[in-house]
Image (tube, rainbow, N blue to C red; front, side):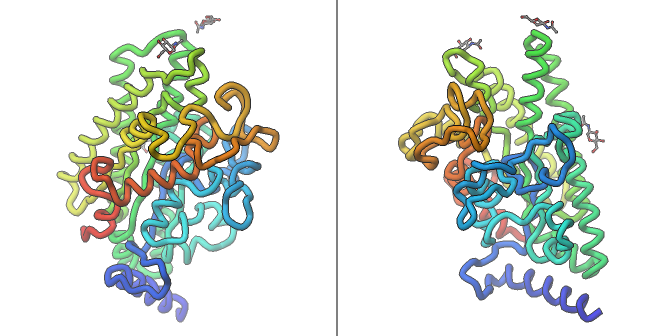
Length: 373
Ligand SMILES: *[C@@H]1O[C@H](CO)[C@@H](O)[C@H](O)[C@H]1NC(C)=O
Ligand SMILES: *[C@@H]1O[C@H](CO)[C@@H](O)[C@H](O)[C@H]1NC(C)=O
Ligand SMILES: *[C@@H]1O[C@H](CO)[C@@H](O)[C@H](O)[C@H]1NC(C)=O
């Protein structure tokens, strides 16, 4: 009972503290907590707790080689921190909230879910349950895990405190790339190029399931959504290496661009329909394409190769303890054959948080954090 009262007071003080901007530490939290949903660009260790051979896990060197202190793998698909970490840092946290399964394993879901947030992100996950099925936590399941977390939070501090907390918290969502990789792979396996009707059906299921997941989070009390669109999936080293010239697969990029345009309309529609729904759509596609157009201006010497890998473009082998490491990891856009380097992730989060404003619609992550839905 005493604990419960303390937790209630803690929630209130965090909520009030976030609003008034009073917090003793150097970091000033813009929101009381962050909840993260999506794929490997955001994951911080959930997949290490999933059984099975085919589950993608960043649990070996050289993953994490640049993390301060340990330099050890933590489940992040990066040489250091990832996009979720850098968004969280911008919002006044040390780094991403911990992974749901890590918190569960250490009996820390409460209080962490209340004081800091939870990450449900899982490498390989798509918007569709069918994407890499059985080898990740699909988005719909991530939402259900959040629902059960919410029930545990309510049991601890009561529904009113939880609803206040969630209303002010930041919901970071990034998924879709894996659906596009799976779609392209399936087309290639059937020796065909997608027809207009294949594409229309694919977009339709992506949009309806994304809409369902976001609406479900809204119904559970989420109000502030920071959503990252699908980037230029045709330019990752693993796709480039399939072309003898190392060129991007323009068709895949166009497919992603078409989806991103539809996602923009979807979110505008949800904002009209759902009272208090606030969002910022981050343009990973536009930002990454601008980076490709002028990598040197941002200090990158490589925009087509994996820093950690092997073979042509570093993309013919995985990033493992026997892989080759590039000399200067901060000068590579890609860490492995699919994922951005820590520095790319940092630059992305910076742009989403603070602009230039063309990289977010209709407001920046910073403005979203400050909004009062
Ligand atoms: C779409 O979402 C629903 C509800 O979450 C889920 O049951 C269904 O399996 C999803 N469909 C696909 C293809 O992922
Ligand atoms: C696709 O083409 C390859 C050879 O180019 C062939 O071996 C394979 O069986 C074909 N697959 C299908 C599903 O037709
Ligand atoms: C490889 O890339 C070039 C340049 O974009 C393109 O013209 C060609 O069709 C690509 N080849 C394949 C097999 O996709």
